[in-house]
Length: 211
Figure (cartoon, one colour):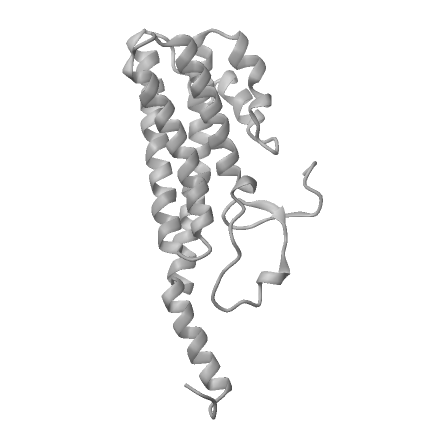
């Protein structure tokens, strides 16, 4: 992957430098770098597109403007906050990531409503247009610049469909991320379980030490 150097991806879809300095810590896991999460990168692009779309193609004073922008922001911010919460609480990370997922689902419905209410086409999943957007979605890192030309020059129905495609991609990544987070939680537990296991291991290694 260009631009990342010797990068690795973990099961949460993160791409970034590996850091062995955290691996030996028995209690606190490595802190999530949200900017390397593909789900966050895509959610940020969705926000940038939604912000421009709402202000350009929706009527001033339409409550949907604020609702769509807030949903897009919530999707992005909850992925960010969940990743940062990973340092101390896997439960909170899962909860916030789920909130972000729900917000993007609400935004998806808003874009679909925009097209349906105006009798505008919604692209089929395997249409040539959707496949082209999907191909753009494979580039890393994901930034608004990849879509800027289309968002700023194409008619609103095309922009709305691009947003729909990107939201689907983002939700797919979040679903994978959640499955991995839930698996890790079941196998490793939360902070309380890790602290208990660390104390237990310490006692076994130091049977004559202070308890």
